[in-house]
Image 1 (spheres, rainbow, N blue to C red):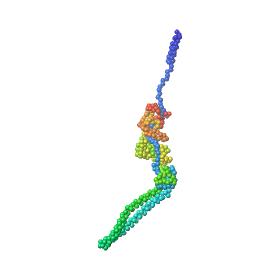
Image 2 (spheres, rainbow, N blue to C red):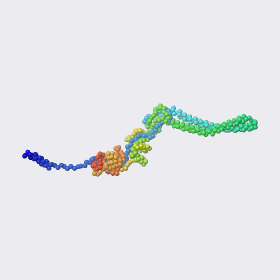
Image 3 (cartoon, rainbow, N blue to C red):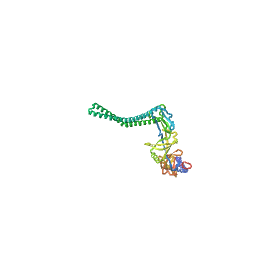
Length: 412
């Protein structure tokens, strides 16, 4: 009997022990949920006048570059310059051989002298024709009287028909001579005009030849740099053949393509007389002068003129520039990390939470130490507001944040 009750007794004892242990266990501590906060840096907003900048890449050009060509055919006698050499105004660049250019000048002068002589001869001929006409007219008068006398004698049978025919022929020859002489006198103005026109042409040719002869000895038209040399001493060149090029050290320009979105703003500023400057990475200063006459879908080329000495600039080089755009009022410069998407930033509220606000993205700005900054504007960017500059991947309005600075002051 006892063996049958033993399992029940053991089970009852176990239940009693379990109940006793449960009744005497300690109560667990109550757990309360706490909200996590994210440490961020902030910037105190101070709206004011800011100058946005526009990064550009342009090509250096020399708009006043000149190509020197041969004014006459000949052999190159002198070329004291080399590629890349700096020259002063008036320095000799190249000279053709005098033996080649001398005959051309002599021929042009000979043409002028020949026509001068022909005009003088025409004047003498005209005076002689006038004198000869008087004598020939007297001969005609005598021949007419002789003809009338013989004709009268023939009528009275005192002269033969042969005598009358001879007198008629003599009168006709005299009249023909007078007619020829008169025609020569009448043609004198036309002949003289033709000779004078040829003389004017010859003198113009002489003047052009003298000019070409002077230019056969090429000197630098300005202080500049020689480039594009095509010939050497001893080369035979033809007329109008390119010899070399030279560009001025001053007056260099940069042509850079400006996106269409900024074009109207810059054109308006130029029309208002504003001076917009651009600085290159190596410190050269440029001024926006104008825009190119043609455009394309990618933008329009802006022409920026170099101010001061060119230093190491050379035409053809690609140059990065930072162009100052017209100043904007009530703008704030912030780090790029503060921007979310294309047009949003977060402010820190008084109770330590994030608040999303929409802003206008104006462009880039440069800090005093050269750091790239983002320039924005918006109605909610009021003075003293705290802008969160730390970029949080889980940023959302209402997210709890706290200042990362130990002293609790906003970062500037």
